[in-house]
Length: 238
Image (cartoon, rainbow, N blue to C red; front, side, top):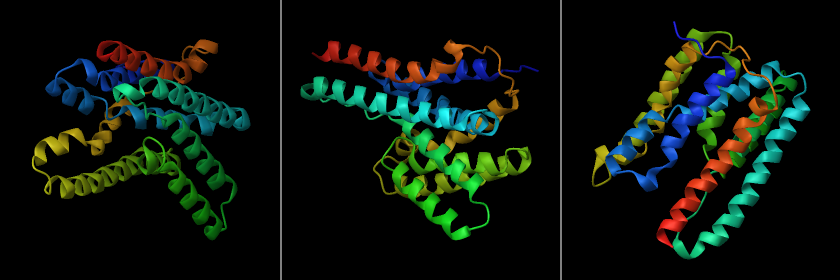
């Protein structure tokens, strides 16, 4: 059976992520197909963050790295959005910040185990803040389920399935009020994050390539590939 280590898993997710972001250059039908195929990407990287939280030797450095690159990307987005403003091109992607907020939530849950009120208030605050960034509560809930059921694959997958079913029902409710429910569902198919389950079956949790390149690959690749794609779009419409 095919098995992917952590770095190989990142490469697969990165490839699918690019497909999701090249909607400027492909047909509507192909764009929908790529969107469906890539719904596992955001949650896939979120799962790796949970994995990192459980196995990291230095949580402080991990948190600082996530927040640092998240801020770096927000600054870069601000610069490019100012450049692209006359052409109606806006970069809103900011999921590294969502991962950082999710990691903060996991840290709080791991430290405050007995005081339900404090846990609830802190998690509510994290969920509220995350709603201002890409992925929002969907990513945080996914990270929560991945954390509490990390060692129980069956319960974890059941939690994912229930969560996906709830998202599907909510999306369908809005779709039925639209002019074209099928297209609405296809374009807002976050419930298809459930496709991460078969991918997690082939993820063996082994480190794989372990150097500075593998460590910082996602943090650099994520913002840079978006800036390049949007710059090409800018050149095309300029």
